[in-house]
Amino acid sequence: MEHEISNPVRRRGVALAESDWRSVLADSVWSLSNEERATLERALDALLPPAGSFPAPSQTGMIDAFILQRVPDSDPEGRLYPALDAPALARLLAGLQGAGDMTAALADLERREPLAFTALCTGL
Image (cartoon, rainbow, N blue to C red; front, side, top):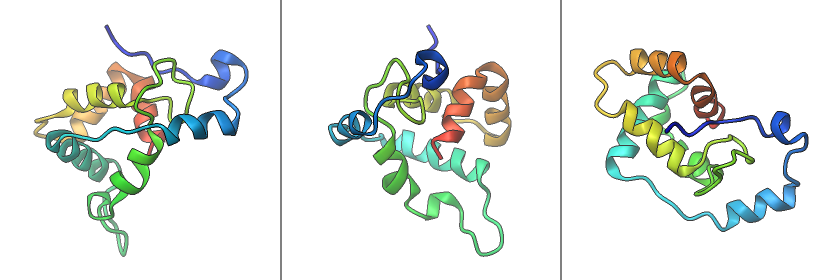
């Protein structure tokens, strides 16, 4: 069964109050396996390729400083930005793991699961 990603504003009419989402994220404690981290690094590098003075995302600490801080460990209703929680991200990464051509794998994800792809990109 696919984890459906939805837009909280459209679905509920009102997003969570800042104090509500801050408390959920403050309680969030999760991490990536080595394989998940490597896959996410490859996906980030494919989505945001280095250019000029901008380094590859995998070289910036983006995962620890931004993604792990903003993706909740549990939000099955997709109420919080980026409407993607740790289990949904893990499922997406499992589908991308081992992809020979990450750009093609991401394009396939975008065709098969456009909402999940958008949530992944929005989380960046």
